[in-house]
Amino acid sequence: MPPSSPTRADYRVFYPITTRWSDNDIYGHINNVVYYSYFDTVANNYLIAEGGMSIPDDPVVGYVVSSGCDYLSSLAHPERIDGGLRVDRLGNSSVQYGIGIFREGEQLPAAHGYFVHVFVDRAANRSVPIPAPIRTALEKILVES
Image (cartoon, rainbow, N blue to C red; front, side, top):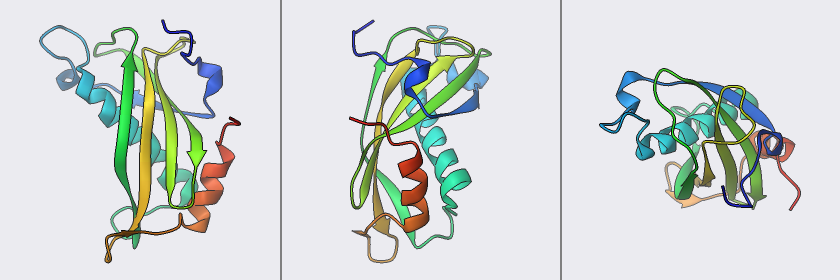
């Protein structure tokens, strides 16, 4: 495992993730692209629950503009897993999340990475400042650099 790999203690909030049979690939483990779906789920769960975001209705939405993932050990359905979330960087119109995917009860992630949202006015399709309720929620899980 790389020396910079985070542990469970490095994340501020966790969401359980239900794996699905279709998450497994021909090699018998969760396919790498599925982890990005988990990242999206964890970030959006937080925005909805803590930031009050209504994704179908809000005039401002978060677009993913960058992402990356390091895979450290394999997972497979039907394992129980948790997605850990933190904010690594908070800008005027963008946020970089740190996300870890953990086997239930384990301290080291099976995968970890990042996800960048730029907040955009849906109608104008242009970046805008992060709405105040969302910014407040993101500040709560911001880690010190």
